[in-house]
Length: 430
Ligand SMILES: Cc1cc2nc3c(=O)[nH]c(=O)nc-3n(C[C@H](O)[C@H](O)[C@H](O)COP(=O)(O)OP(=O)(O)OC[C@H]3O[C@@H](n4cnc5c(N)ncnc54)[C@H](O)[C@@H]3O)c2cc1C
Image (cartoon, protein in one colour):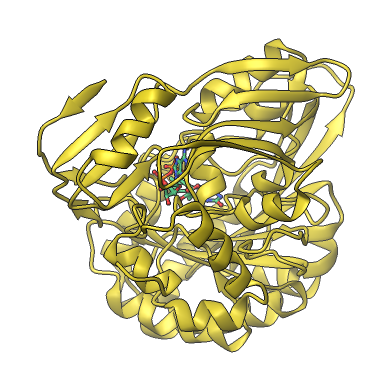
């Protein structure tokens, strides 16, 4: 086992820091069991540190499961794959494609690990497409006593629903089996449209494709609509990524024209309206995934789908009236309802709205002002993104929260995985 002596750890955005007594990298399940039993607590598991909330922070032990990586087995008939929970999505996509399989959907990036994606209900877009945890068939994990347990959807469906979204508080997952589909190609199209049209045709634009999303550009009056549909056409030329250049331009115009909003709107609006539409075919992961280099902080709430357009309108008005510093686009997606107890999509067809703020600038006032709009529409926050909620709020938002906590207590009776932050959001003793 590798043990790294005390050093400061920070997440991708740089807004969460911790000084653990050790970072432990067990090589196998026996070593993992020893760490959970004996290492200084709390024991918090890290994926790739892409969450914005302090889920991973610990003053005791941060557990890195990078050794539990790779494709362990796959079934070409049933389209299932057993994967190490520490596998990065970007590695997984290659392994699955080589095995003739595809993930039914993906989010914006492929830097997360499988364990991390399941930890926070990471999702992509598509009204008929669930988040990653809806693919879960089996989980192998080390519980709070370091014992290995295997849980299967076939024999224990309720347990899979209880632990499918788990915040790293229901044991350390070493292996999962996913239901995948045959590898496929996607046609991705992007076009600009006025925000008014996006709001008027909100439902059909989000629901009219297998997967679709909007990026609304603040202070521009415009949005970009992206759609993804499965096709048999061959792969075509993938146009160069423009997102990072676009962000630089938006920031530059923000800096220059913060106090001339009408000019900012005119310049950005006409530049977006002139953007050439994008239309290409790629293998599934090539179409979903983007590079995100500019660091930001993010708040994303999951709302009842029918509230999406109203909430978006209010948030845009608030931003454009009170927060001229914001230049990142808002991202609007849809997600299918599911049955997982701590899933923000639990029994609710969802519209997800995400707002972003430059990581180098203070986002406190902005997120504090936006959150009540999300809350008004009974939004459930993304577990890995900024929010101010505590266990009492979650108990009201999640009908099976109490039962989930009973399952958690059975898996981790001594609260080895409970840090002060976890105690706050789950309402269990630290
Ligand atoms: C640039 C960027 C883009 C993003 N895009 C999206 C997106 O498109 N859609 C979306 O939904 N989210 C998105 N996110 C959020 C991100 O997907 C989640 O925060 C995700 O949980 C991060 O995965 P990770 O591997 O970094 O996990 P971490 O952030 O390291 O951990 C997340 C949680 O999982 C737990 N965990 C990790 N591994 C295990 C394991 N093996 N066993 C048990 N628990 C474990 C941790 O303890 C923690 O509670 C994005 C974040 C960033 C920074």
